[in-house]
Image (cartoon, rainbow, N blue to C red; front, side, top):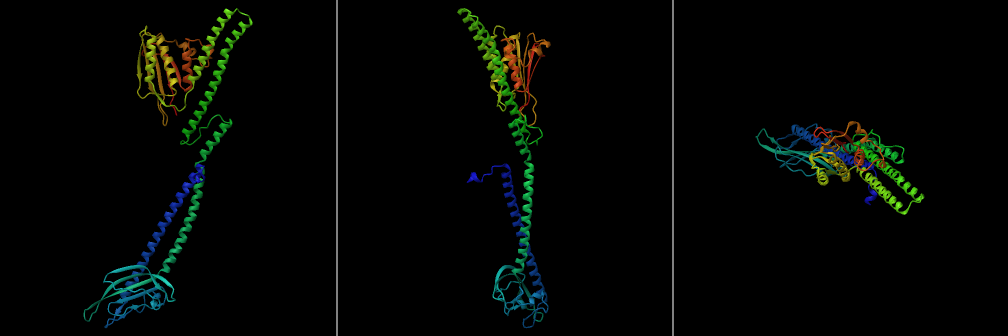
Length: 466
């Protein structure tokens, strides 16, 4: 059941949540306004009944025997109309009570004496109308004291004024009908406006989906850059992923093409020797030579394919531990030269990529430096500049105190696109692998003169990542 009712669309989820919130808010507002109106209406009713009570107290008189002399003209004409819904009572302690003409017929509730100055407001209280129908009234009462001028005696009395609830209920009904009607219309308008705003706010997502479909169909190469800044990290990541996958595919195709081209020559040599009918011993020796060559070519091309790719969202890798492991091995190989490698590694510097790529970069650059250095090698690793919401870049540099590299040979040394069968082991293969890895990470490799050691400086700059 939960799966059936679960919305399958972000727009549906947003619309459902916002609609429920809006309905709850309007219901709360309607309830608050309703209670405020009822309280205000009851307060106004109390004030009106109090004013009638005070009017009766001002115009009511008593005779010598203590009898009640009501006012000739009541505060409201309804007090003289039987069953009008507005009633007045004057209650004495030791004398009969007085009831207005409107109360002649209806069965009014019993009234008790109040102490002078005491007030009460009650309701709704059940009564029986003049036609024997049940009804309800609100009752306000206040206690007074009457001074008798001749004897200076005082006696208490209480005035009650009652009003039928039908008038108040009619006002409340009219208000509630108008209130919920207007709230319903306002809620419908807000829901419609909310739907329009929701479709407008989700339009960039629909455009992203449309662009992704065009990329899938092959009609577009990448996502456009005209998106809200909240979606820019998403579209940038998608573009980076598309470019990474496209580069990996191109790299695999190039590797297979290079490998096929590299094996063509050894195979052609073997075919020629077989067709020429070479002696068995000579043929065996030639087969052994060509097999070793093919094995070397295959190993090299596989190494290039493995080291050239990188993971787009890789975990950060500490540099110093890998560098120490490589340097220990190189110091054993070149122990006769007595080369010393120094580190200038920033503690926060990290390589975001494959561990194998980091080992290839450090291994080839450090081995090249150890090979040409006289006594000193310097490895530098610092964080590059960082941008908002992106991880910082990386600066890797290897300096040596060897003879250096002439500036006119740098371009040839770092020439791009050179096939593997055009490189000779020990004469640039390591630097070519470094160049391919750096290119895969969209970085730069520069070869300059070392300002500290005087030899060559190989500097790698990797840009900030996503």
